[in-house]
Image 1 (cartoon, one colour):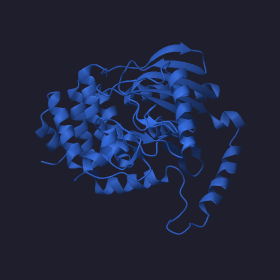
Image 2 (tube, rainbow, N blue to C red; image 1 turned 180 degrees about the vertical axis):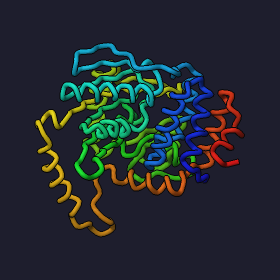
Image 3 (cartoon, one colour; image 1 turned 30 degrees about the vertical axis):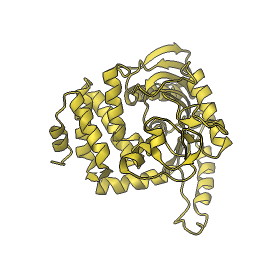
Length: 356
């Protein structure tokens, strides 16, 4: 296991992305977004995704230096096409438009389709709350299906995340961000690379039988992840497919065989300006009273305190910023191999990361 400081890691990852032909700005946007996911403790959406991104670029499924394109502009309603560009770029551009319209009009609904992997969706909610706005995000995944519907023995859709962000007065915002599967697909990749098992109740094998072996979502023959909360997670995943996929992106239930490296996302985003809704800041006091009372609840055995969504990520970010980011040896070798495939010298990546 390597322990790498986040600034050298950013420099090393930017080097790999530049090897794909990306501009300096794009390389920074992609690399920094991935490292931020690692900092928050979401290694599933961090630098371990980079080999797949590089593979998608080489296959032609991911376009470098692409930007979001407006398909429909109806004021508070926007439909955008990501042109199969890096999600870290087109996602930020889509959110900038959503924030601008919500500030001007009080709310905005933005439908983004044809975006390559948007990364940790919580990053887009964080953009909204930084502007004092509430946001909701429904996301589908256009790739090989990996999650079984409730009662099903085979995969029927992607991990289809749901995210919400709410700014709070005088304290960090609530950022609710989760895959509708029990665990994210990337967590099985991380476990596989580490040689670890996943918890009971997360996976089924190719015959629909319960398993804890992560290989069933990493290499064929394929098994499937399970949705969280039985029928509830499955229902929310279907909602994300209908709203983030069919409605926002015009593509749902898409099937691929897993050979291609690209991962496309559709995202329906709703952004609300609470000040415009209330004509003032009265809502903040009500929200603060509720949250303060909630966090004052006595913790039960085995828990330090009551947490608000977003608190674990903030704590992990502080710890990892101080101590460094853990990167397992298998993942690091996959990144070096990806770098070599686009003409970036692995030794140079090692040096940039302060590992050599």
